[in-house]
Length: 150
Image 1 (spheres, rainbow, N blue to C red):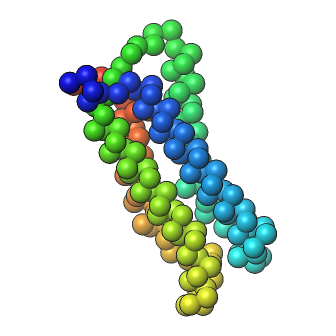
Image 2 (image 1 turned 135 degrees about the vertical axis):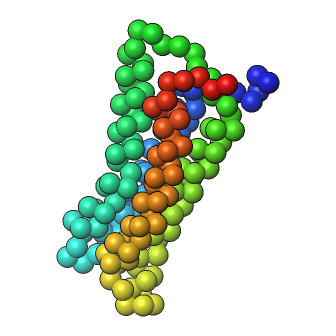
């Protein structure tokens, strides 16, 4: 039964690293599209306004909880079910696949449907928000919940 558990701190680190790496790659791609590739002509600020709330609130929450927990005098070795961790990791990866898909297809939508790239981003907000909500709920198990898993 020991193998079906993972230290909560290890799960937090792995999830945070996944989020940071995916965010960094997404920002690089977005930087290329907005500043170098000119995929959002005259609307780069609005495009960035779409991206920032998709990744940074969750990122700052994760780091805030990790720093607070690291500074806490009553640090405990809490373990969580590995299946919860895997589910959360899968949801986070799925969320970033959705985000990458939206960002990659925005220029294509213009090419094939003459839909401006920014409009493509705005249209995707509902589905992105739903998946982001799922990711946030599963992440709360690791970054907000204090109860040890049974």
